Image (cartoon, rainbow, N blue to C red; front, side):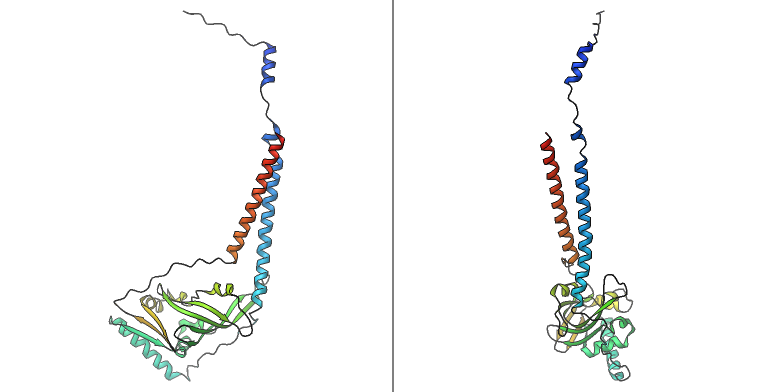
Length: 287
């Protein structure tokens, strides 16, 4: 059998030289407390900016809204049911004819005036929420004018403070997804200007949304196939041979919050870029 060659341990001098030749780790490269502190400062600065901007934006919105709103709601006219008893009977007859024609699978149309719409708000309990905030004043071929008294949040620091938007909403009604919506074109407040950005927050205005699950109104709204305007009248129709219009794609609007997030993201990315650049430059100088 071949004999194994004896192993020889390196001499003490060789060990010392080998240890000296081994590169030592640079403690400044393995641990850099300055970079961690810088990142922490950037994070705290970004958080402070976000909170400060959010608070500033809330107070700014309140100041702007206060320019065209009031501290109390105006009283909208409500038809008296006793005085308008014959009109209520006529309205009920219209509704009954509409239901009968639809039940018989025939084309049915419900043609209403502004006065009849407001009378329906006063007479039927389902519309209780609209009685003091929503009153139709005019219908033309292109638009519907609605007097409003909307309750809005007031000062950010007071939970019981409210403002009221008292004016006229100029709208264009549409039928979509079994619901009557109103595309808001403008809001008129006497002697004041309502910014376009604020008007966009209300569009589309959806007063009928709460009735989609109503046992009485919900099924009827979902059957509607057309909505048309003419001078002094709005007509809702159900045609058995037609399919009700589907809901349109949701409109994406860049509001104040989204703009704030975009601005915050841009500032945060800027801080991060500066921090990365500073750390890399520091490492380059130590080499």
